[in-house]
Image (tube, rainbow, N blue to C red; front, top):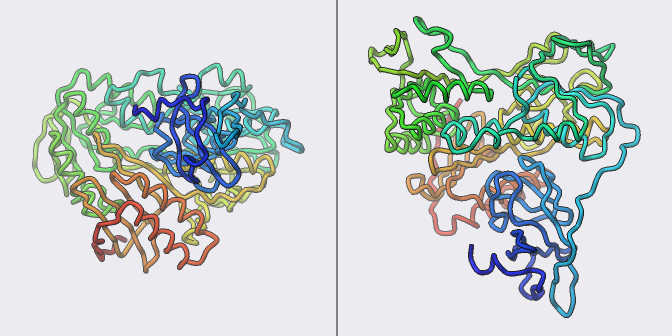
Length: 533
């Protein structure tokens, strides 16, 4: 912590030192805090993101919203409210008084509590115990909904921080108690009935009732389907069901950890995000890891060959061995035979070859399906009063004009939040820009936008130096940006895309150019034409 971070903000900061958009760090009663100035005045709020405690002084302040540099959480600077996931908890805030040209921090502002919502439904049921479902339940209570609220989850565990399953938790960096998104006490205090180990069997859209695997049918005025996705399971000759692990739930991860403790070597099938993050975590546990993939370059379809090759070399430098352009043909005990004849010894086999959306409940209910559950801009399905969010939702993207379905954690949370508002009649369009992050040892990749395919890439900076931005384009339209070591650029580009929804494409591209120029002032962009179908 530098000396400015220890400044007692109660002693005041001269207004001349508070320039719009600049965060002045310090502390209030020992709590890391900051002063910020906008057109509406001067505000004092906490300086650590409530998601992963990132330093918000490195974030972006614009439009009365403070954006976290790590995982793009958003906070209202006047109230501290977490207005955009993955953060769910508000920042602490204090009153500010301006006296003799100085901004003085006064008493703490209590977080606002939502009052009763007029005309709200009597009962809401959420199907799914993942990111979207929990975020929706939290938002409903935050906004003052006081009717019956039930979450139905087939999992044995309450909603958890799922991205961490393949990262720090699997690597042994965080304890079990760190993983739940909310404590057991929260569900009791918020009067959220959480039905675990319970499957949703059928939806009666006319009678508005949900049939479940145990207990009585659940009536609802509003229903949110957030059933998520399930891992693709591979059937490999000679492999028993308990030999090839998949990673989706807390229980899955605990089983893998238990097996890893008895293992010296592992084969990871697939070079996806999960596959490579699992490989990194197992290396951290001391295992010899082989990655087998039909891809010729890891994550080619998502990032292109430049980042993919960089990731391969980086993982290889950590001891991972890649077997690309092939697949597992057979398993005989601990002997794994690949299609190209290579034989590997593996005490642990994990498949990370992607997921498929859980659409069975929606299909059985007669909802419109098109490679996902079709929803409108308010996330409502073809059946009035029934909404969908997360991995299953195929929604109209305001930035490309296409319907898309995105399997990202933060986006699922944001969809759950918007669906909650709309179940309360607030009619808020879903217009969040897709965002995800992927961690590989000490290298993090941030990605904003959505490019199912592209025909050109522009690389600024150096991928090898872990200091770059890669823009993906289709027919000249900028669809997505991946960055390494350029958090500020990622934040600025996300804001440019979102604010540019109401602009012409020329205005939007100008803002994107300015966003990239903020962090790539001296780089010469390299254009690479490539079609990824």
